[in-house]
Amino acid sequence: MLPEQIKNFREMATLKDGAYILIRPMVAEDEPRLMEFYASVKDDDMRYFRHYVKDPAVIHDWCENLDYGKVLPILAFAKDRIVGSASLHFGEGPKRHVAEVRLFLAKDYRRRGLGMKMIRVLVDLARRQGVIILTAEVMAEQTKVVKAFEQLGFKSQATLDDYFIFPDGETRDVVLLTMCLHSKTDEF
Image: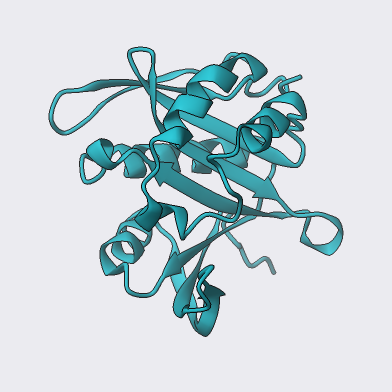
């Protein structure tokens, strides 16, 4: 069940080119459309995924075992088609105040402003859930993506050499970005 703070969350967004997008939390009934969305992922993008999202069992597991206290997934819809998926992955124990941001967009919806809108929604939802620090990991070579996160208020904290490894064993450097969601005020 969705936490009360986000149960009825819906946001309509207009992209730079005038396209209308609905952004809302993922629900179990989204499974067929999620299967379609991830079935179209090309091999060059598949290399970046942590899970083999073309496997229907992976998507079924995500939908069947939704736990919004661990992962809060949101989807972007253009009419009935999913064109973006983003999520907050909540930390536990000493990292219970931290959540990691993840994002994937359909190829034809990239560079249209959708990624920025979805990250803004995640920032808002993270605040509602009491998250203090957001993190994001971006390939160092994706300089435009790093800059986009920085424009939204994230700070580059470190570049981690060879931190990401592709299925073929090739490695990439990763930029670790963070955003503090509450202001630190000094008191006398």
